[in-house]
Length: 225
Image 1: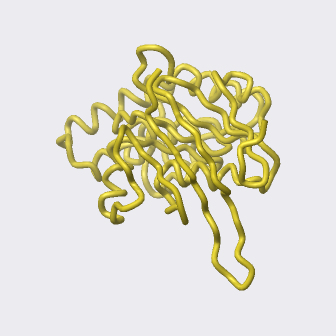
Image 2: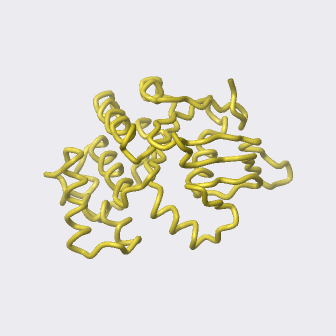
């Protein structure tokens, strides 16, 4: 499989009286169609690496290349556009807008990208929610849904612009056992040969990590054996 994302010499250092190194010279690839789990102890740099891969943070040194396009020199407008076009995000806490319905939350990335008209956005939002078993919940606000339902809405939102890569940071960390199993199944089903999608997930959950095609173990900001 070809590399969808390449990271070379990736470093992230927080400035301060005593600089803190979060990521220390990581080389890695994300292949097309793969499910990659990033594992390691708390504070090892897993989420920092994910934010660099997702263009949510800028490396202190090194390069992240997405579909052959270097990103370190892009301005924030170009980075934001590339995120909208290519990447989807799922976090431990769903970060849904509480005043919006599930349908409206899913529609937000499509409205930001601006490729579809209102009718097409509404139809795609409905279809995504229905595909995740939430067709009857489209008009509910987040506070009217369970934690597992809210996380599935967040997954639908991540898929709104049909991204090549979905990045998930502890997506099952706040869920009960049944909801965890459901989210793992959804993430696993997203990728594979012919899917056109890759998934990178940061997790402490051994059940989720076991579903991955490959694991990348991070210790003290470096790739560990």
